[in-house]
Structure formats: structure tokens, C-alpha cells
Length: 286
Image (cartoon, rainbow, N blue to C red; front, side):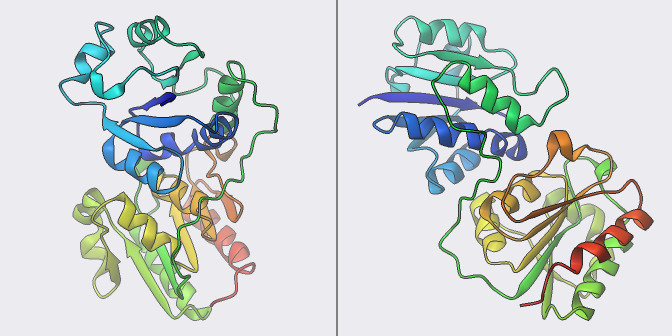
């Protein structure tokens, strides 16, 4: 079996931004088995969406020998090539290169200059592999889930500085209901639950058990609105109509990928609210 290794140990949104490059790589290596090494639930999601064929936990004890450059664990087999999205991975890359017949590319997870991270990953991969098509920054990895009538709001993110005041999201839910959306639900993770649960009394709250449950929930939504976060990045690539909010981050660098994504940059609630009203004119309730 011709095996190709993909290693990414970072956050969900950062991993998703590599997917256009990964998808193109799969297309030029159709006979290869793509093995993922990283956070198991993110790797399993990539398998579900057809980007990977198998996966392993990057933080398992047997991988210590691999990342230190001492030996390749038997379960990784003998990869003929690899993409390692790692800040520090030279030892592992040198180890793989000894037996690989294809390039072993060590790519820092983030660009050093100002460009969209998805384009950065694309260019980095194409510098090692003969990918001739243009960057596909409007990817879609649909799940076989029937589109529902509910709208989703995700009021959190990985950084409190990216979020607006909780009252903003409550007002947003009321606005969606006024515009004819029959049901509005809030997505909360463990961190948001502690911070926001008392604000959302009486609202419908979703707390998916894992990232695949989150993906199914998002794939069934008629509209998703959320801050710059991994949850928003997932909504975009699933093809769900998405409004992505950027309070402090730059969508020119961190913009959510997808065919049905609207980007709204606003540094405060008043500007965000004006932008939201304009965005919602594009969306008809289900």
C-alpha cells in the first residue's frame, strides 16, 4: 500500500485552512492511502469528509520516538511522502526522508508575511508537489444531512477578545425570529457554557458531544452566524450559509473558507449590528 502521511497537531480552524491544499494533493496522488497524525477527533472528521483514510493520535506515547527522530512507529508503516504542518518537526522530517521516494515537506503552521493562511498552505504544498490548478478557497465538503429550518448562533471563540457582548447575540436571535426564522439555536462549548449560560435562559442551546456531532448540526442549519473560530470555519467548508464575524482578526488572513460565506469585519457591537442587518437582507428564512 502506498502510504502518505499528513501531520497537523493544531486547532480545528487551523487544520481546516489546510484542506484546500490537502484536497488538491489527494487528487494528484489518487492511489495513495492518506494517514493523518494529529488530534483524533479532527482527524476522524477529515476521514468522514474524504480527506484522510486512517488516523493516529499524535500525542500517544509511541509517537515520542517519531517526533524526536529516533524511529517510525510500526503503525505508521513506511510513508512514501509526507506533509508535516509543524513548527518544530525537523527531526521527524529527516527521519521520514531516509526512506521516502516523494517529498517530505515540513511546513510551519502559519505564514511569516501577510497573506490568507489557506493560500499560504496551498503555495507551500505546490512548492513540493506538481499541483497545477488554482487555489480552491471555496471548498465544499458536504455531509449527507437534510437541511433544516433552524438558524445557529455561536457566541464564543478561542479568545474572549474575538467576541462581542452576550447581549449582542441575544439581540441577533430576536432579529432572526422577527425576520421569519422559525427556530434559533445557540451552540455552546465547555468554555462558553461557563461564561454565557446565565445570559441564555430560555434559549435553545446545543452542546454537541464531539466535532462530528457539531458538523451534523451545522450541516442541517439554514443559516449559521459566529465569530472567527474553528466552529465557523467548519460551517463554511460544510457549505452551510454562513456569516462570519471578525472583531479583532483580519478576514484577509484568517477568513472562513467556503462557497456560501459572508465576511463581516466590525470592531464593536454598533458597527457589527449595522453590518448584520445588511447581511441578513441576502438571506430568506426557510
